[in-house]
Image (cartoon, rainbow, N blue to C red; front, side):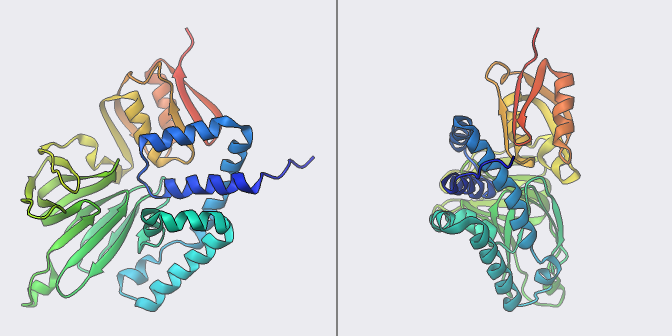
Length: 329
């Protein structure tokens, strides 16, 4: 017998949560609120599962046009890509989510970005100047290459960049700086390999080789130089002191997560960025210490490996709702 249809109001609410997760920058309070909503009723779980299936259809209809965009295919193709996305969102989400989206500028900017990835996806791009760029899971960027500058606008998630010399300089033209813009400031490359990430209302820069200049938006603030093997977090008004980078800062570009004495709760929060649905940590085990190297392309395998290394078990209510608990006995 066919199951009852999920109420439209619940579908719209689940879609609102999906738009929030699409932003790639979900706060701990938002995850807790989603957790409470999902646990309230089995119908909420059904609505969320249905939206997860739909979201893959939206993504497939609206995937970015990588090569053409990078070869400056022109404004007409970019506009067509955005119209396709808007039609898909309108088809699958309805007026309720459209109203929510209008109020949520960052998620919409992410969905309309030149290049973006879905959860668990990584993407390599070769920019027009020869720079190599890698987008991490649930990330989005816009490119602004002009006669004066080479700009990357990070809309969501994380990006790794290995800059190339500006080819225009070799032609005797003025050198164009290479700069990553975030909602909190700018990170300007000085012949370098580096990563920039958005998380919890802040930006993080980490340098693998070379140096960058970090400049928050606050007028009059002094840029901070960040060198090889250093990382720092910054907001619109504050730049924290540089600290040593950790091994895992760029390991994700190779499909790996490196944990060095991480709290289990923090480890699972990071792993959750690479899988759909909800990954919870029971408070009884949240302070267990995790070390090791885990695969990001198979998060189920990562969880199974975790259960072998720690006294925990993996409980699955559905494929989209997983809880890590203490192992009995």
